[in-house]
Every structure is written in C-alpha cells, then in structure tokens.
Image (cartoon, rainbow over all chains, first blue to last red; front, side, top):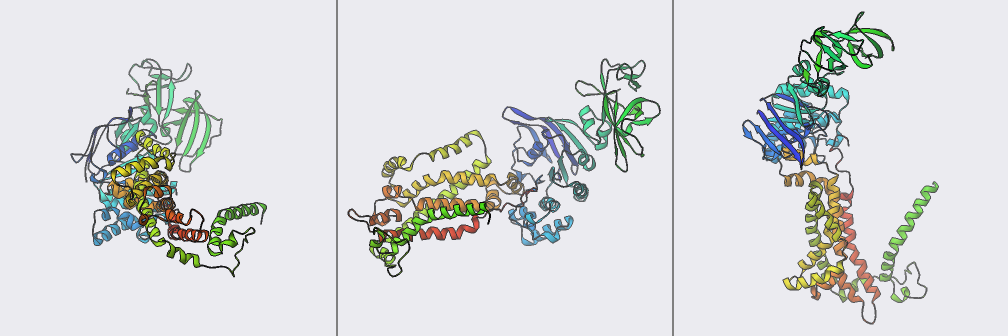
Length: 353
Length: 276
C-alpha cells in the first residue's frame, strides 16, 4: 500500500515535450482514473509511473520515496496492459506466478498465492491452459491475476477493457471495482472511456495535450467543470453547447441571434459572444420556450434521445418519459436557468456567474 | 486437377529436378565405375551390376577423412555458436533500441555483407600472422564469424520485431532484469528464429573454403572442404573418391536439418496478444 505523489512531472522526446509538468496526489488506497482523448499523454504518464519510460523532469514519489530512477522491478507495482501481454509459452498458473518464480519463492507459496488469485478471478479450471486456448475475457483475468499475485503497493491499468466486447466490458468494470474494494490497493487506471472513468474512480484526472484540465471526484467534475473540454468530455450524450451572440445582465437574457433569446442567471456583465452549455437531461420540452425542430428520435427503452436544431445549432435531449415525435416536427424547449453553464468562446474557460 | 494446380506442380517438379540432379549425379559418380560415368553416352540410371560402395570405405583409408570431418565440426560449431550468441544480442538490441546511431550501426552490418570475403582475406592473413592467429582453429572461427554474423543479426532482428515489447515490459514489472526478460520470456519465443539462424550459420561455415584454404596451413588442422581438394591431382582427378567424400560431407548437414526441423515451424507467439 502506498500513496503516490506526481510532482511537476515532464516528458519530452528530444525537443518535443508531451507532458508539460503534471502534478497529482494519490492517496493510499485511492482509485484514480486518468482519462482523455488519445495522444493526451495519459498512457505515457502511466508508463513513467511503471518505470517503462524515463522521467524528463519533476519528481515521482511513492510513500515519500523518490522513484524517478528506479527500475520497474524495484517500484513495487503491477501493471495490466491493454493487450494483456501474457507469456504465450507459459500456462495460466505459470503466467500468474511468474513474479514468484523470479524471486525464487517456494512451491507452497507459489501454489497458495496462485490459487488464491485464481479463486478471486474464477480461473481455477484454467490453470494448466495456455493463453492461446483462452477467450479474451479469460486472458484479461489472467493478466489481472498476475498483478494480484505480485501483491504490489500500486496497481496500474492501461486501458485494460478496450479489447473486450461491450457486454464483457461492463462485467469486467464491475469486477475490477469489486477487486479494488476487496484489496484496497492504490490503483491508477488509464482509459479513454468516460463511462469507465465516471463509474470506477474515486478521483478522475482529465488530461488533454499533456496537461491536466481538471481533477476531482466524478460527480464534482460532472457538475462543476472548469472548462468546456471537461464539460464536454464527461457525460453521454455530451453536454450541449449553444453559441450565443451576447448576454445582457440588465434584462437577464442571453441572445442567440436577433430573434431568439432566453433568460439566464448571469449577473456579471460579459461583453461579446458566449458559449452556453446545458446537459441533455436538463432540457425540458414545454409548450412555451425556444422554437426547435426535431432532427432525430432514438428510443432507448428506458430513455428517449432526441436531436433537435435550435437556430441552426444541434442539441441533444434525453427524456425519461416516452414521447412520440416525428422528424421535422416543431417543438418548444426550455433551458432551466440554474442548469446553464457559460464558457468563453475563445478558450473554452468557464465563466462563473 | 485444375490447370493451375497442374502448372504449379510442374514448376515444383522442374525446380526439384534442377536442384537435385547435381546431387544425384554426385552419388552416381561415387558408386559407378568412373569410365561408365565419363563415357560418351553415360547412362542416367545406375547399372546395378556395376554398383560398388567401395569408394566410401576407400575415402577413409586413403585420406584422414575422419579428422577433416572433426576439424570441420570444431570450426563450424565453434563459429556458429559464438555467432549465434552475438547475433541474438545484436538483433535484440537493434529491434528494441531504435536510436539513430544504433540503426546506422545495424545498417553498416548489412553493408559489410557487400564486401566479398576474398577482399578481407589478405588483411586477415597479415593480421593473423602478426598476432599469432594464423593456422589456428580460433582464427578460422573468427574469420567465419565475419561472414555469418551480419545476416544472422538481421534474421534475429526480424524475429524479435514480431514479439510485442509489452511481453518483456510485463516481465520487468514482474521483477525480471532486462537480460532475464530476454532469456526467460523472449528467447523461448524465438526458437524458430534461433533454429533458422543456427542452420544458416552452420551451413555457411561448413561449406566455407577460401578462409580455410588460406588461414590454415597444417595438414592435420585441415577442414573437409580443403581436404577434399586433395582428390584433385595435378595430372588427374579421382572423381569416384571425390564424389564419395562429397556425399559423405553432406550427411552432417542432413542430420542437422532433421534435428532442427521441429523448431523451424513457427507460430509460438500465438495467444500473446489479445488480438491474436
């Protein structure tokens, strides 16, 4: 068990810097997800924590000990790779117990630890099989078993579920979360899937282009994003953004264009255009309000998703009741004042009212 | 049988005949009386009333054939064993470390392949004379290594390239050193590559002639290829003994192939990755 401190860590390849001073505090036993689009540096950061990439600047500490120049095997970590990286010439048991073999553990310890991990993951019937004889989900479990047997102070996961089909992904997501509840080992989990990030993490770190955009608990980030990127990244369907021409604090209205405007709780004067954000589930369909035209209807069973056009801009709406709407139908929508977010159109920074 | 299949079979048979006929004729020359072979109209099929295997026994009586074979084995196994170790390490590092100087070094290995062996023969001869490697097995072993290592290195690099890096990274996180990861995780997966490179290296130095002819002078240290040349006299050639010796010299190579064939079959990395 250990806390991890990432202090102004940088990574550059030659003159090209890909991580621009990243700082994260990870508490002992915490489950942290690093999330962001591909190329944001999340995997690079994870590999630096693992010791597979060198650290160009800053400090990496575990329980107060500097890890920067330690070899991977000295860092007391275990990692689950995206492609699992199972040793094809070894059986499941040999794969899981490889770390024990390297430190010359006795047969009793080997059997005990491998069997315990196999119990946790339901792999008892497969111990003598080779990775080539397993399904994708089973291979994934073996990779996790290898990490469990290692009994590290930190688990690292590098997009472990991205090679599984959707149904299995949901199941493994729950299993990994349950595993963390059981072992309470500090976990750093990289994903580009915001659903994984939201559902599993104690703390989400949203990254883009080598910097941290925002970090915090999943619902904090969801409810109180610092900028348009974070607001748009978390949530599915993602937050709607309407480009508005101006805000008038005197009348308390936001004008999309000459004709359309709606009330907004924004007391501060803001010169010029503004981007207004609202979550799809907060938009109301009412008899009075902004005119909109239905562009698509997606009945999901539990919910109904609509895509509508407002003043030429597209908006998603999630309704929990079933409605019948035809494509092309004209409806009116209401944007509740207390559910609006405002962003600078130029840099996407949040404007807090 | 479709026309396509017929044509591909015909081509295969033709290639097999072209490749195997010299070998067949070598055996024929060894077991048939020389005048029958050298006659104006030699028979393509053996006349069983004239077949004799006496030449094979005669090879051992007339010349130190056994000692030549042993010398060839020492030199071939010695040079290919050292070459295989070096080529494996070099190929691994070329595959995994891709800095520009390293890649340039790798390319220079291939370029050295363009230099004919005869061109480095004279410098080698002079150097060997000065440092006392002339007329030694180890000298000949080193000379053979210069021929085999470049290509073997690139062969091995190709095999390492196909093994995902995550495997040794996983091993290193599990507690292995880089060398342990190579030995325990990566090498077992490159058995086909090791076998292919090994066969190439052994055959190269088994059939090598020019270095052995020049860098070894003592008759008792002579290898097969050079020894067999003694059947070619100033006035005449003892075709029957030469071909019998030639036939015998192929036997170790055939045994080697039979032994290594199972390893040459690829497919060991199946299941390493999620996608495979």
